[in-house]
Image (cartoon, rainbow, N blue to C red; front, side):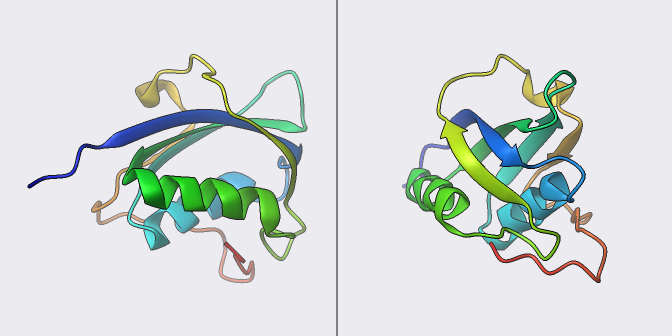
Length: 116
């Protein structure tokens, strides 16, 4: 039986802009066989809006990892707080989008280590 695709919207606060958080997030989605979308908040440099699609248990574990792994990459990306409520950005309107299974994987530059 096919599993129902789960969708989760949330926002993260912390050191998340200017440290390749968005590309690290999408690369971590690829590693977990999830689809992801991410957008910097244009008013608050400590805020990024995220969306995930995929297996519910995998998404829940990913959210746990986002809050508990520090730093998230070798540039010091770090989440201080995860706000688990809808941000009202449509999937197709995000700045970066990765659909699991796409040939094009969004990655940070090779010199950046992703800890997620």
